[in-house]
Image 1 (cartoon, rainbow, N blue to C red):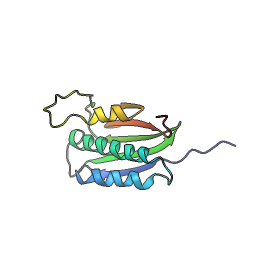
Image 2: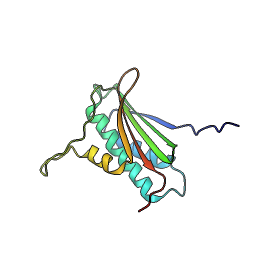
Image 3: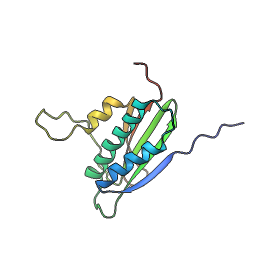
Image 4: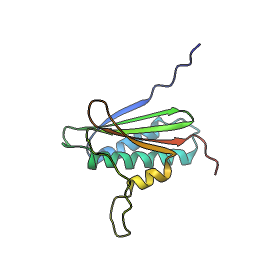
Length: 137
């Protein structure tokens, strides 16, 4: 018999800075008991960075736009996708020591086994990042 995959967790939040905390909390509450503590911490950090970037750079109208967050396990990883209605493509920057921001994707790049920016079929952009269930280190 064909194995039915798990249904991804899906949330939509207003494009408002208070949604960063709500998104991080939603991810934390959806994770199974017994998960490697560092993985939970890393998933919450990825959530914070990606949702913050989506709110800062991917929305036009804070009072109307929504940020979408999807979390699912597959292929030995937890995958996190954060989508916004914007058309811009996030770019990995290398800010100098005096810069006050611009390090979010550096964190994503350091933590995630793989990550990519994907256009959405109808409108917007998604950033998808994966963290392995187990880590040898």
